[in-house]
Length: 148
Image (cartoon, rainbow, N blue to C red; front, side, top):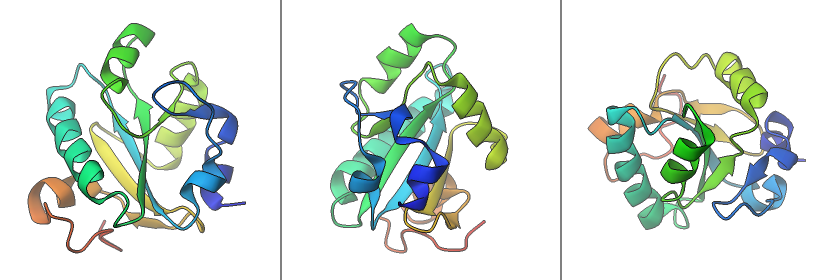
């Protein structure tokens, strides 16, 4: 089983239409971004646009998948915000799992994009947002290994 499936149980992951997704089948061999964000956060709104653009251009070429982990305050906000996202989603109802991930990866603010190797669980880049928004907008050095 891919390490990402051990970190995030496949029962918790859906696509934006709400369909259950087999994490192992979808993410094996890929770099996975755990994207912590919320619609009420203006920097999140801005970064989400940049991440969607990057994802649509490069997800296939760079073998990249994203899992959205919401910090929205209610399910209505969550649904509205996540409806524009082309990637996988941790269900809003999984607040306990979300909090476990926040603690496990020491997420102290949003937006936050953490990259990991889906097969090994190795963290490749703790602050991929900064890399994508500031230093490497075209992703030439993606997945920005060992940049913390």
